[in-house]
Amino acid sequence: MKIAAAWAAWAAAAAAVLVLAAMPATASPLADLVAGKTAASPELAGLAIVVADRTHVLRREGYGRAVIDPGNVSRQRPLTAETPVRVASISKLVVAIAVMRLVEQGRLDLDQDVSAYLGWTLRNPAHADVPITLRRLLSHTSSLIDGPGYRLPLGTALRDNLGAAHWAPTPAGSHFAYANLNYGVIATVMEAATGERFDRLMTRLVLAPLSLDAGYNWSGASDAAVAGAAVLYRKGADEAHWASDGPWVAQVDDRQGHWPACPVASDGPVCDLAGYVPGGNGTLFSPQGGLRISALGLARIGQMLLRGGEIDGVRILAPASVRALMTPVWRAGPGDADGPDNFDGLMRCYGPGLHCLAGGRDQPLAGRTLHWWGHSGEAYGLYGGLWVDHARGRVFVFLMTGSADDPMKAPHRSAFSAAEEAIVADLVRTR
Image 1 (tube, one colour):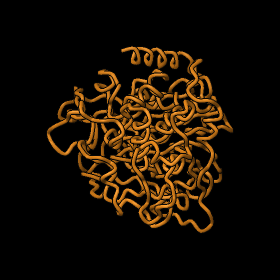
Image 2 (cartoon, rainbow, N blue to C red; image 1 turned 120 degrees about the vertical axis):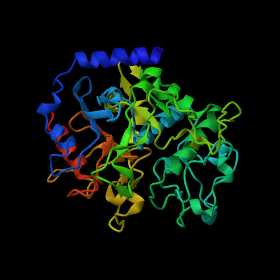
Image 3 (cartoon, rainbow, N blue to C red; image 1 turned 135 degrees about the vertical axis):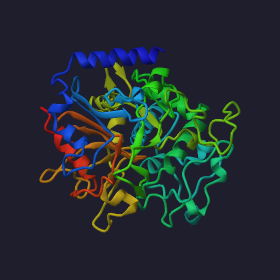
Image 4 (tube, rainbow, N blue to C red; image 1 turned 180 degrees about the vertical axis):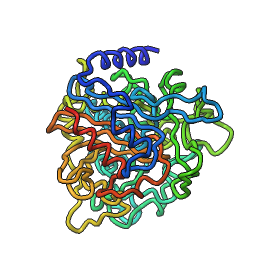
């Protein structure tokens, strides 16, 4: 596969230009963090980190295991910076890049009523005179909420499943409420505007041009990527039932080298995408969180953004588009409480697809204010982030692939978990 070969070549080149050699696991405080030997965190299944500047990978390290199987030790593999991981809501940042490519091509407009693309009227029923735009969807100011759910199964249409329970009482543009459903609508708009399935659009617009062996719900990724996937874990059945002394329980991607039987949400045994008409239900392809990509792959995306939209002679976005992605649409004001709508203060500044660390509980370091743009991710045991620091010219990526206990239990000062605070503190010390 050409993408896989190009990705392997870039990864090898990145290894050849390391400015700071990857430290062995025994030499890093992150190893103790993963092993649960610090007060900052329970034991972690694994951790992958990358630090890069505009041209070089400065650090790439992996700790713990990508697959944990005491009953079959031959399956167990170490987690590395090259291991593909389901990166949860970091996926949204990559969707925004694709949207901006379509904007540059004149296929989409951030401020156009999306009803014009969908072919039906999308409105908050309580505020039918207020249009829903891509800028509002990308920035979670559309007045959509997840309500009863944000993934619709194959065979259902988005237009028939956006009832009153999916809308806030406030009009679009007046309030921030983080909702995965926004990105299901965005994917549907992208499909309607292009006539192309979302997963294939993402490969064509972003992943293939960047030579990344990655994909939404694995679509477009290579057999090798699927075979090398990290499993996401918890100790316990889910986030409500922790069992820190019990075994690791696989949450997502325990594929054992096999492709998923159905790459989209399906309520039954039939998984036939041949009759799917693009523009009907973009939620199928998990635009909100289904990207599988490595920490090193995310760092390459971060480098492209840090460089104003270009990397290795390939221009993905115009500099103006990158600036637009990093321009706040919403900032928390004095009257905006930290609560469920903004992940308890983690998101206090949001642009069209990226959020920024602006001040308050979104600051993971004591005594230091970070002004980073990027996106965090949290789902199925994963905690992670891709962050661009323009002031220092750095890209920071971290992916925690599972925790033995609720990572928010450990003493922490911000809306980040204690483990994330410790990881960020380690990453920013990179010279």
